[in-house]
Length: 354
Image (cartoon, rainbow, N blue to C red):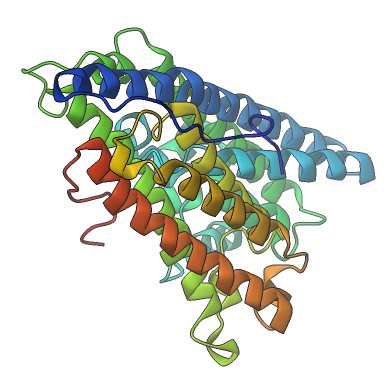
């Protein structure tokens, strides 16, 4: 798994900010999070999806061992890059259903698989046109569609139609990722609204409200990993395991995704400086959050079996169970302790009501 930075250490800073200093502190966190994490991560993901498009096109033009290896590498890199931005479930990522267009998951009713099978069976030429595909169901687009086309049955040696569809899907994906990155990079866009909140802004009237948005994204990211990506897959026991609902199972990247998710959230906390300068009563929190994030990453990376086998292997399953416990600890510390330390009110998140 890639490393966004080397030797991440969450720093415990010095003085407790007075109430009058909190707006400046909140703005500093927001600005660091945007400049040091969000903009680089979204820009990198845009480049990675562009590289994926070129790799898909290269493989479909010349389907040999070398082009397949290049495709596998580009797909893995793009999927890990998605882990780095998918928890930012507000603003640019949710506009125009971009999040679902990038990856239509979870899909508990199997809508995506049915629609993909139908498009392949009908040889629907419209899915091979990027412009037409962009206006179709989100289930027919993005990383999840590309995975089905190139890693599902028939994906090793795709026919001309399947390849044309995959090329179109990868081009559409790159366009969506670029739009997200452009919105975050814009001088007068979402970044400006967060760093310079205004009383007339319907969402971000104060620095505290801007910081609360980022804190909510962090908490939601942890919830997604534990409640959507891990618990349903593990089930209550081996008999209840459901590896077939795991994200990116066909491409064998589920474990890599879990590790990348945990690492991305750890980097977001570190680079944003969420735990710097906390009140004295919460002086323990920075090291505790750092320790648990490191445990989460190590637990995920210690699983060497694919998810289809890991959930039925006692040792691997034990590591995944431990990962779930650690994620739960982090959720409590982030949602309750960190919110209190920052003086934030915990409200609804992007998953409430789902």
